[in-house]
Image (cartoon, rainbow, N blue to C red; front, side):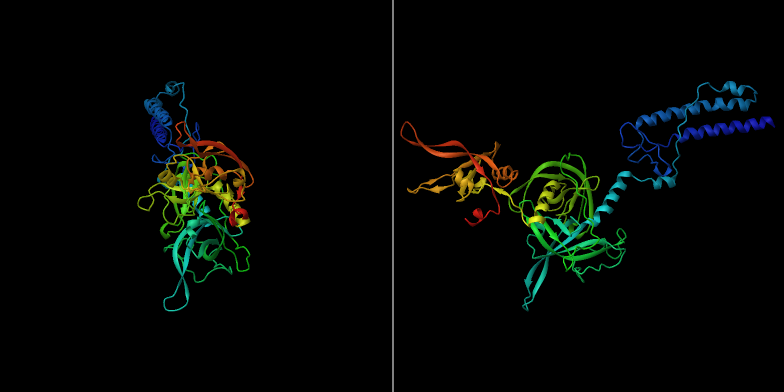
Length: 498
């Protein structure tokens, strides 16, 4: 009887040893924190394909311990199988194997194992999507068979809710050709129809079927998609920014708006994660992901002036994404989608966004003043491409005209003029502003916009002068001169009227 008991005990120990060794096959999730490995509960353990798999050195260490357990298992069980009274204690080695508490992963637990990056993206989308709006734009056209004026849809775009007052931020080019605009917003009301006095019913929309907040949508089943008429608060074509506003008929704010969370574009680094939410091709609230591919880029605005410090991303941006937010990995706005580089017109992995720090400044000015007041020199200039082709000017910006009565005229700057004898004299060529080299007009715009109206800057020019050589022949030479010029405001009546 005792022999049989020893036999069964020995078999139990052997099976237990093999089970402990097999337990080391399961690998615990590893946190991204450098130098630390964290064991999770059953629902957090990941399989071998998980992004956060255990490090190679941990796996190697666990394999070594498994082999040790398998090798000493017969030594544990041999005394019980042979039947010795005191041999069991003598056979056990003095050194013990340190056991790591690891929870074995079952198939059910594997199904519950969630990728933390995936969960973060889902959380960001569900939090930010209600702050992103769908914009339809219209133009007016007279009916052929009557005198009625009809509104014809001409395009769509994206935007985002700026504040609880109902301000909506988008691109200027989204509404540039429009006479009116409608904005569709997701508002949380537990499926109850919005009672806002400004809501349009029935409302036209170019959104494709299956829109979020519409019948059949499960992602935002507690949200209702409501369409409002929008009015323009202010625009800035030079930065491709426009501010619209939606409110009730009595101008009171619409309730339950969800303003987007703003971040900063300062300190961005290439390689950081980025997410874009917008309405490409009528597919509302589309999420795309990528990385920041470049910073400090430059694109041309609708006014022809360059937008500097633009963010480049490979997150897919397509027609309809314009005006939508570009987010960081925490769901904060770092830019506003504005342009793509593509030979086909669709996303080629090169998209651009106006940095949010620029957006903040422009939007604040537009809400407060309805316009952007910029510093100006008070001169008209010639396009640098034309000056190179026609006059051979390879560096700098040629002044065409200096407005009378401006500080630039008082300082002594000169534009192109015709002398009494009919000879055309070339004006001053701006080559530097406060030491910043000026190669083309884009450089001049960027150098000036860092200042405020009323600031004084040192403008360095090359002034063509005719000198007579020793042989008595006239020769044109460039003389470098520096002037102190007080900048005027873009809404200065002295500049506008003359």
